[in-house]
Image (cartoon, rainbow, N blue to C red; front, side, top):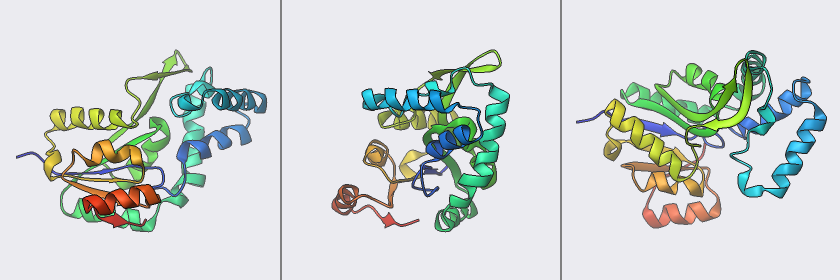
Length: 210
């Protein structure tokens, strides 16, 4: 029998807000991402709205070491204060029961690593960005953890680490988390939109507010 996991989305589930949006502004504010480049990037997103979550080209050419350092500062100053006390208590409840904690997010891996460390989570599945030497390439490496890809990546982890998803828990706030909810033993809807709230009631999934 495999181990039980508690799988948590990050943005708007554990963290009140969008972590990468906070980091984007932080990069601009501290001068690592010039305002002109930021505006060009945002203009490109407006023309390709379907790519807005996958497009990490704003990181292209940024020095890895300095960017990761700023990410940790951003986490301490802007993200950690947004960690929901109710969400933290929920994580601690699962840890007290011996459950494996998995953070599963489309946000950047190097940005959410400090959250994994703070929580003492066992696993982090997040967006990985490639490197060209000492600088970021701006290209994704591996699957982008969003929608169906979240389920694919979680299943890969469960096979490799012996997790029993049929006895595990998943917490998420988005309609795209439905792929995950339908393949996990105990889905929990967090801070839902009205559409997700209706689906949760239809399927009798618990609703929590963090």
